[in-house]
Image (cartoon, rainbow, N blue to C red; front, side, top):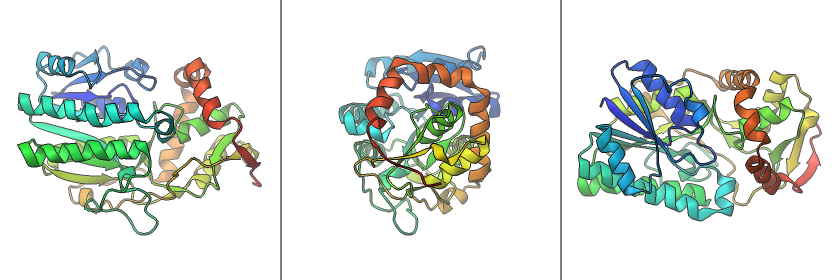
Length: 343
């Protein structure tokens, strides 16, 4: 594996992974293939553009001819698929686009990898395919139990990947990652939304009672885990990827406000979203057996993330002030207020 096509590489985790690979391996070449939807942003790749080992192609993973052309032109031997519609809230209002990208788009990539005889196909998936885990922690052999159009579409993609391994012997691997935080995350997601709202003294909209539990991992730990699975993982296998610990959303919000020196009066409870999973939890023993360990605690990951958004207003402020983001924010949060936080 020397020539990687990173689909969805202009998004949050994909752009961090492209940067990680180019810095770690001085003989690897990276092609980012991205449709540049609302969350795909060339500013995420700005520092990589001058690198002679980096290339960018704008394209849709559902476009089979364009995908094949990119693979052949750049002599790709490995696909790492980050391309996906990813936000649960958006999946509730537009499930069709999730099915197209996350299921059909995955099929297009797999078929291209099969017919061209690529060395490896890696699918970047999510812990949400297990559904809510109220006790214990999900292991890779647990049944899929999806509760939103987003998680259902990602599970469909996973099943297609495993089917191509069983049916055609395509060398595939899957990682199911927990919630990543860090630089370049589109500010509709909870952590960058809360950070940027707090910086502007705007309310932080907390769904329901705020006691939902998530495993927040630093994005570079996630990237390193994918790298480990690419190079040491067993074809046909799934690997959970997270920290193995969970934090309540309200605790995350309060820690974030404390780091920024902002009052807890900014917490604003809003009506919960339909089918909101109470808890995600991953057993990560399988990937730890490959030699991977998370390098950041939750507190360290949050502090680094907060600092990046404080220092990089040039990146997020144009996004949040744009008409597209403002329309999304009004549609999802305005009129849903329940009560202020008691602190």
